[in-house]
View 1 (cartoon, rainbow, N blue to C red):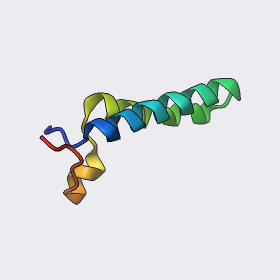
View 2 (cartoon, rainbow, N blue to C red; view 1 turned 180 degrees about the vertical axis):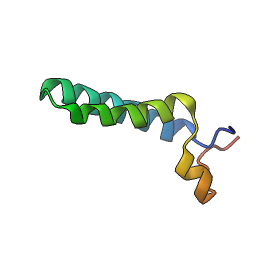
View 3 (tube, rainbow, N blue to C red; view 1 turned 30 degrees about the vertical axis):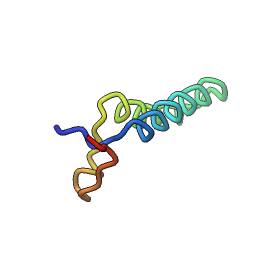
Length: 60
């Protein structure tokens, strides 16, 4: 797995994932579990759809 997520993209994913999870807890909804996806892809710095489409926001 080669990193295909840059610093800005990673920060956005981590913040968005945490916000979605927090909203799920606040509203007591299982939809908050969807926040795991951006949180995980931000933490791993690898996004499967980016890989399939040949997209990379990583400048290294």
